[in-house]
Image 1 (cartoon, rainbow, N blue to C red):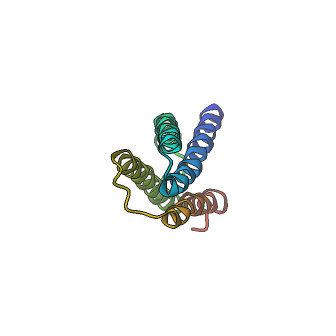
Image 2 (cartoon, helix red, strand yellow):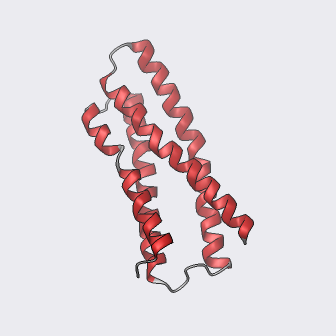
Length: 138
């Protein structure tokens, strides 16, 4: 079980690195007017999204193994709340994809200010999930 935990944490940390960095690229994309720089940023964003998606998938699979196979958190309210946080992370991940597709089409309706705020969502979700996992407030 400890090896599963180690790799779950590794993939979670790696996934979060992508979730933190991709919106920062969007901040720059939203204000960039130079076509060459814009193409470079779009390439970076696309490669990062393709790289971080399997990391998130592995984190989710290993988390499910810990929960369903090893029984970690089963029947406990903190785990149910954590799962809601994970669903919110999945929604954020998918919204990153939607934003990327809008940038690729040249149809992004949002300002760099919007993406500065958007960038804070994974930080808040990480804090919430860490509190739930470590403190187990209920």
